[in-house]
Length: 278
Image (cartoon, rainbow, N blue to C red; front, side, top):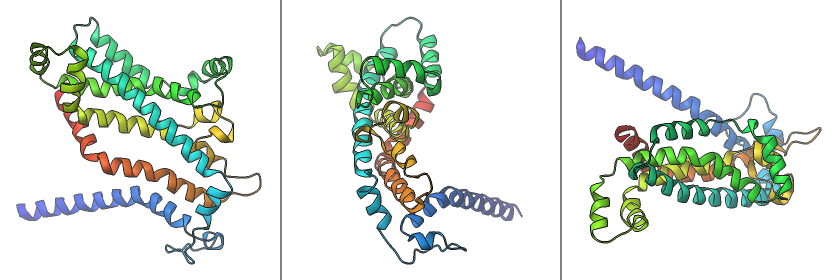
């Protein structure tokens, strides 16, 4: 009887997991599936699950007519540069907080966590005036700098928790061998903090890649528009190109999926290590 109950519970658990998985995957499947359908096939009811005919028309139109290649390039440049800057600054700050005798660490970490949850819309007006006065509107730095500022607190929080779990005896051994603080950080601690580094990097890249409000307000020029804003502006006054929108969305999701698949082991290790050691 007990074995029967255990099998029943496991079966219910698996069914719930499968249903949750289907709910999560269904929108992405529908997005990719629709991107390969013709306009006539998209409007058919009931909808078909297999594109007939199978076409790349919407992908070609997104890159040739809607300047999607420019938007993709801009997002890649801005997200990568912002992520690199965040990781460098977060590494220095989190190592200092975790290792150096700084007063008020607890209030500082609480303040960082509070800043990371601050809404973008609350500072959009003063930031716009700053960018305008600096003549930075329609430029890469108009997005890179705000992205660094908004993502740095969370990256410091994640990486500080991981650094705190690394034994301090390693620092002492490095100092005995004559290594300075920077040498200890980059040659001894950073190789051991790789999961925390990848965790902060992945979260920062995804946040920069998907950000919409700053990209919409600060960069109105096509030459500096990002992928999230570009897809939103595909729709015209009288038409909505569903196929092209889904094609652009599919291309936009691919870098995030690839990034997570490549670094998922380190990201999970960084999150779980931080949860246990923090």
